[in-house]
Image 1 (cartoon, rainbow over the protein chains, first blue to last red):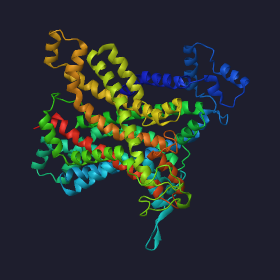
Image 2: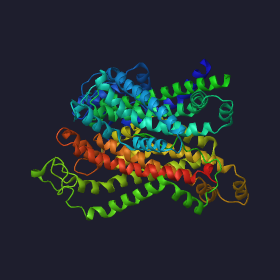
Image 3: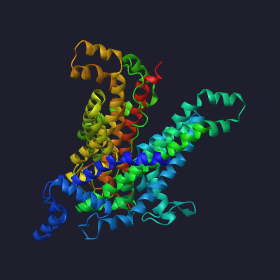
Image 4: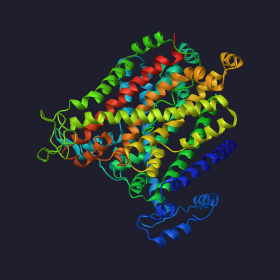
Length: 313
Length: 298
């Protein structure tokens, strides 16, 4: 296993290099003088020259790239144009929020997705199966910013129902559970829908196989056949989807953070795009990509662990 | 999001038996699939509304009426008015064509580039394949709409830049599917036969490989329209796409969120419109997949 992880890490090196080349090129692809762009629109000629010197923009491109990468490796991501603070610090204080938002949302979508997927598969062709699948289709057709605003409307602003008001949760911020419920539902719903569809079709494929028929013929209880025998194998392809979903959720977090005024990486980036604070945008994109790459390695490891256990059985 | 959320790619495998489904069989299967029929009818209705709707709307989508700001739905204004007193119904109808334009053009660009790269990669193999696919891996390393966000940051905020950004985001998905299908078609004997007859690479690719990899492309394209519309409206919601006076639904929703307390309909209605259009393409895509998937043919 250790060997596998090391090999997997080595395999990602070319991807990581590619990612840094792309983020490095970003600033140079923007029309205009990179020094002017990195120094900000209101920078004086002197500041621009200083920036040019500091960023080594007079050096040949390969040297500039090398400098950039050594900056990334040592955690020096430059300074924000807007407030002059180190980009690394700005990211450090926010990354935990974004990761926990994506993490809880993934948990929610895996939990709901598997429950509803199995439920639908077991009742294949019945009305309840159809209803769950229609709900899942709605789930993945909804823009999450819309879902977020609807949830705010009903469960943060609230409605008077009989004797109580439904404004149970908070519409902004991150930290207390009242603040976390609505963003997690907002971000997790689409993932839950996708995982439910995947679990259902994977279950249906497994359930037709001989060993399931054998188990049933032996007189094993249906509940045990479904959960012990079928689900275990059906979940293997689902794991891959969960990994991809975590990536989609990191991206979706950008929007969710903006809907719920959560001070995370995504909100930082959108603000930075609007104020043309490119050092922040550049590093934000880089950090998101690195996160996603490492989550994928983790998923591969889990996938292998699951497969191995089945091999041993 | 999304790609952002990628709905279809994971489920579509390279066609295991890449023979074309007969047209009549395909039509029978397609029309017997409830989701394809419902989705298809919805899509036709949406396209018709987008084409002729703007000529029949009760108000000009940009006509302001400050005396009737933030009114709820009524006989005069079927879906109410926004914060400038503009008729939301007229704006939704007018915005329909923007939504379709974004969805279709983003997918058309992404598909063309992706299919081209995928076929080249699968057909020629070797170094070209490695280079193209590694590049696709790099693009796929940017989670969800992040790549689109980065592209918009470079190009600047506008609807057309959002289309380019969303298109780039779907290129690797197409490239991977098409490469897989091309690899399996390439192994078939008849390709060797045409090669022996002296057909050029271009002829083999266009005449013999492309038609055989068409099914997964069509399915993915339909589903990609849905995800592209979601991603693009998300970017517009963030203020990075269509700019305010334009009746783009994501931007309308973003406008409406400031009036959530007094007039929740201003933000709610454009969202419902997005859901209907995205749902239509997802339904049709699901139906298409069932009809075109040779695995289920009999």
